[in-house]
Structures are given as C-alpha cells and as structure tokens.
Image: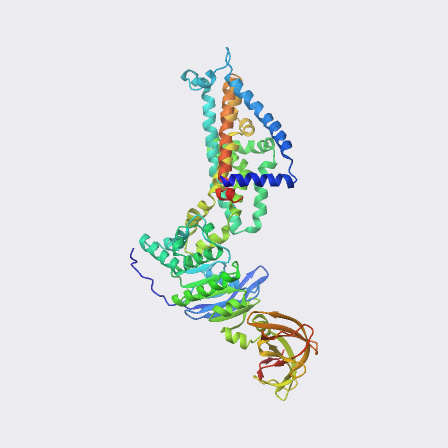
Amino acid sequence: MSAVKTLGSARKVRASHSLAPRRPFAVIVLVVFGLLFALPLIAMVEFSLRTTTGHGLEHWTGLFDPANEFRYRPLFGGLVESLTLALIAIAIVILVLLPTTLLVRLRFPKLVRVLEFITVIPIAIPAIALVVGLAPVFGASIRILGSGTLVLGLIYGVLVLPFAARALDASIRAVDVPTLVEAARSLGASWPRIFLRILLPVLRRGIVAAAFISIAVVLGEYTIASLLNRQNLQVAIVGISRSDPYVAVIFSLLALAFVTALLAVIGRIATPKRKVFDV
Amino acid sequence: MSDPTPTTQRSGVSVRFRAVTKEYGAQRALNGLDLDIQPGEFVALLGPSGCGKTTALRSLAGLETVTSGELLIDGEDVTRVPVNRRDLGMVFQSYSLFPNLNVIENVEFGLRTRKVPAAERTARAQEMLDRVGLGDFAERFAHQLSGGQQQRVALARALVTRPRVLLLDEPLSALDAKVRTQLRDEIRRIQLDLGITTVFVTHDQEEALAVADRIAVMNSGKIDQIGTPEELYRRPETGFVANFIGQSTLLTALVHEGRIALLGREIDLTDPLPEGALARVRVRPENLALESFEHGEGEPGAVVTTSFLGSLRRTTVHLDSGLSIVVQHSAEDTPEVESRVRVRLLQDVVTAHVD
C-alpha cells in the first residue's frame, strides 16, 4: 500500500522537474492513441455480434456447433499447426540459442557482438525477401525431413531469434554468469549439473520470456506461411474470411487476446517483485 | 541430528608450481613461476594489478590452462585435471552465491555434487555456517545478506567439502574497511583451526602482512621475493619489493671504507660493498627521528606536510639536499608546516644494494 503511495508521489515530483510532458497533455495523448487502437477492436467485437435481426452471440456459439464442424475444420487445423510451429520455434530457442548464447558469453566473449548482429538479421530482412531465399530451401528440406511443418518450424525458429535473443541476453546480463559457473565448477559440479541446477533456474525469467514472445510471433505470422502454401492460423483465418467473415473476426480477436495475455505475463515475469517495491 | 563423520581436522597438503608459464597471445601473464607451499601454510600472493597473481591462482584452480610447466598438489600432478576434479575450495572477489538457492543450499552444493547423504550434508553445512558466524541465516537468500555476510557464506561453501587447498581470490576487496579487517582475521582463525593449506591473492600489502605465514611478492609473472612478512619488511631483496611493501624513501651514498654517510652519520653495512660503489638504501619512516633544528643532530630540512594517524604522526620533510623524506614520530610532536627541523637515522646498520 505504502509502496503505491510512494510511487505516486515520486511520479508527481518527476513530472514537475523533468522534461516529460505535463499531465494534461500526457492524458490527451494517451486517450487519442488509446482510441486509435481501441476503435478497430471495438468494431471487430461489434461485427462479430451482428446477426440478421440485430445483435447476439450466435456466431460465437456457432463455433462449437457440430453442424459447422466441417466448415471450421481448416481453422482448428491452422490453430494446431501454429501451436506446433510455436513449440518447434521454442525448442530451437532453448536447445540451440540458449546454449550458444551461454557458450559465447563464457568462452568466446569477443564474439558477443557478432552473435548480437546475427540474431538481428531476421528482423532486418523483409519477410518477402526471406521467402524468395527460403522457397528453394523449403522444397529441398521437405524432401529430406519429410515434414513441411517441421521445416516451417525451423524457419520460425530463425524468425524469432531477434526477440528471443534479446530476452535471454537481458537475463544473462543481470547476473554474473561466468563467476557463478566458475564457483559451481570449483565445487565439483559437472556441466549438465551446472546447467540444470544453476543456469536454468537463474535464467528462468529470460527463458520463459523468450518462449512466450516466440509464441506471440509465430501465432501472428502470415506472410511466410502463406507464400510457402502452409495452412497456419493466420492463413486459415484469411481463407475462411471469404466464406464466413464473422468467424474470421472472432478467431482474430481470440488470437489477439491470447497474445496480449502472454505479453502481460512476460511483463509480470520480467519485473522482479522486489524491484517494484524498491522504487 | 547426529553427524556420522565428525569434521576431522585434515592437515594440509603441499602445493607446488614448477616453471609455470601462461601466455595470452603475445602477452605472458606467468613467466616460469616457481613456488613451493608447505602443508598447512597460508601464503599470500601479493603484487600490483597485472603482475600475474590472479592468473597463478586461477591456474592452480584449473580455471586457466597453463601454457607450460607443472602444478602439483600433494605431490600429484594436476596440470591436466579439470576444475571440478581438483578438490579445491575457492572464494571469489565478486559475490558468487547462487541466487536461486538459499544460504544452506549454497553451502550444501559442493556436498551434493559429492553425493554426501542428506542428513550428513545438512549437519556439515550447518556446522560450517556456525563456524563463520551465520548459523541463524540458513534460510536467507543472497540478496538478503550484506557483502561481508555473502563472502562468509562463500567461505563456508568453499570449506564444507574439506578441500585439499583453499584459494582466496581477493575475497575482501569489495568490502568496506572495518568488515575487511574483521573477516580477514576470521579467515586466518578458521584457516589455523582447520590447518588447511591456503593461497590468498591480494594487492593490499597490509592484508598480506597481517595474515600470511609467507608472502610471495609477484612482479611481471614471476616471484620477486618470498618470505615471512618480517623478512620482506626488514630485508627486501629488490627495489620492487622494498617499494611495494611498507613506505620507504630511497637514499644513495658512496661506500667509503665499508661504511656510508647517511643523513649526517656514518653507518655500517650488513653486507659489505666495494669501495666507491654507489649504495642505495631504503629507509622506513619508523627508522627516522625528527629533531629540533637548533639542538638536534641529523640533516636539516623544512616540513612539507604532517598527518595525524591516531597513535602516531607522519611528517614529510624536504631536506636541504633536495630529497623529500617521510618520518614517523610520536603524535605528541606537532611540527608546523615550513618550520625548520632535522632528520636523524635511528639505525646503526643498514642493508644497501648496488645497481
């Protein structure tokens, strides 16, 4: 309780002395941009509630009507596909990116910059350019690995690198990883033990944040899946919007809500409780 | 809870560096280091930053692979043995408690890796925590402890496995002055209690003088001199050691009939030097006395600064010969700045070098 009060008064003090905009102006900016973001969402909700006679929940309840199962099958299929893709991307983050980042930090500190640069590349290259390069690889890889989902998952693993690497890096920087590892080594611990008993628990926040942000990115991805003819959630939504726009909007809303919730959880995890009360 | 194996006081083992060299690219951090440490001995590696003392310790720990040479612990060659199998306890300069574990879990960590049964593990960890005075802090986490407490836990964690050698890498340098001396003396007490061979890296000569059985003064990857604190202080063998340990002023004089003239007196030499050689003598503040200008003996000069150090006072005098010299004297004498005084040497015999 008292912490909240302190926070409030601290903000007041800052507002009167800092370069930050004054309160009324800040409120106006917030309201204007808030409306800008809220309007399409409100419109979507309103649209999804429209019926021939007025407003009602029939499109929402219709989702679970066995009679419509055949029509909506691609949608649920897309959802499963997207979640599978997210799992593959997370596996890449934890099994490849995390060990690589740690290895670079502990053994090759000079390569930290290089790794940072590499992980940013996927965001610097437009998705469409990425696809042009990926298309031939995609075809060949499917022949080798035998599964389009797996190959697209690998591509998504690359696509989430910029976000996941940042999340991991922040949590690695927050503690003195090299000293902790040396301490554990000098106490007789083997590498697997250090990884399981020290590094995973200490870096938990960063790992969870990286995983969640990977899910958020993968659930929202349309361009690459569409251009490579894969049916993920976004592709399915666009597909069904031609025959049943209501359901497309409902699914978009649900996906958005899910991702928003994930991001909120990341925010919770990323700020340690102690810090909040220390302000 | 009963402890099936009460802490046996394991007497220490010997440690030996044999021509150890460590290169980082073109740079040599260790340059053929030779060092013999007796069982149960507390040896301080002392030197300025970059002299190789930390590299020496980390090489012994196995955290650095040496370029050439051998490391022996208890007569066994450990040069190629990985860190986690060297059976050493180490305390680091930066706080190194595992943040995800509480105090007792931190202390138990090394016992878990050695598969010590749970009951014995807890008993031993608790006993070691009691020893460092933190018996009541078992459930706390690192962020709930002060710096000094964290280093105590780190010490308990390093000792609880009854390692062959205890390695201390400037464990006190992040602490404030009072805690530093307190913990320093406590480390020494526990070390004597357990009889464990200890290597202590520090850049603080006072720290080294206070706790070590022997001090190895390091300079550019080698040991300049090794000896008891008294030996190093009284009879430094090189200018580097004399300069590094304690405060001193360098005086020079020509040798004449086996004696030299210092501050207006003829002084004998401990080791004879050839006639006419230019002898260099390091004089410590406590071997000098401040005398009155009118009635005293010694070389005249003017007071530059004077500082009160509690039980005594140190005064810098600019001698008429052009040299500045630091004199230590009773705190009751309070010479005024710029007043005329004389400086007299209290020693009858000095050790001089020629170079």
